[in-house]
Length: 93
Length: 197
Image (tube, rainbow over all chains, first blue to last red; front, side, top):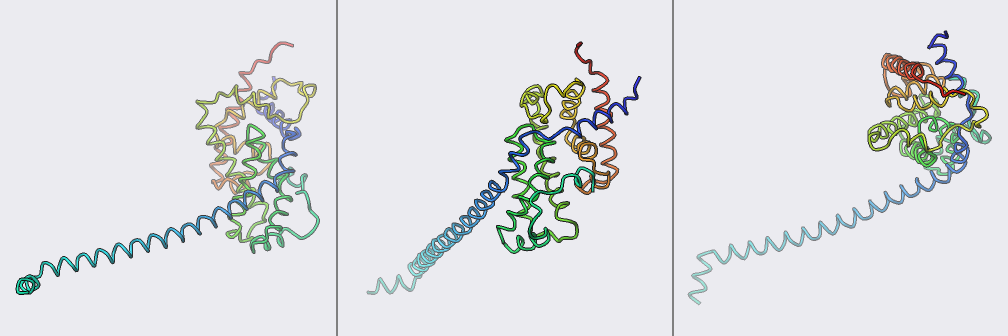
């Protein structure tokens, strides 16, 4: 009866000695082309992201600026309208 | 380095050294990085093939390794050889792949995995020992950590120390995983009854 450890070792050695699947050579051959395409697409994607972030950021700031200005103007008008002195002046006129 | 690695030098060895190529690639030279990919494509693909279950997965995982390497080139400090650094990325990507497959094992039966036909280029005539396919299937059934360790130790012929460096685990964890994996494989082989000839 063979020692199970030795048996496992000898089978493992045979697995190790097996030639790699035929697909390995095919994939390795085409790898650089696919990697270059993915790296380029990744860089382009990153560039696209930064460009659109800049555009959206600028647009958001412009909208917030306009909304802030409008809110300030409205609040200023409300304060003016609520001022009793203005009311009295309007009545006297 | 292991015998497997010294026996299989990276392809496309002519031209500038790896250090020069890495330096240029770190400076944004796409052609230099492309040359690195060509040089290590065979080595990385052979390693990945030990873990994946189909040609499509092999292509995807091998590409991922190099895309990750491209992203991480800035962090490569040349304290260890570029090949070690690349193989570390490959090992961790393969381990992630195994974990993802293991999580999905309830939805994909192992019989189905064996039907994928992603086997070594051994002809049926050479396959005289029915225990070999049984052992391959048993290795596939191991838990991801165990399979990673046993593959690197037994099939890629790395030392415990090298496996620890490749996986980022401690040497004692590597030894424990190897012991468990071998125990599971022995058990599977003992329960395997070859069909009568």
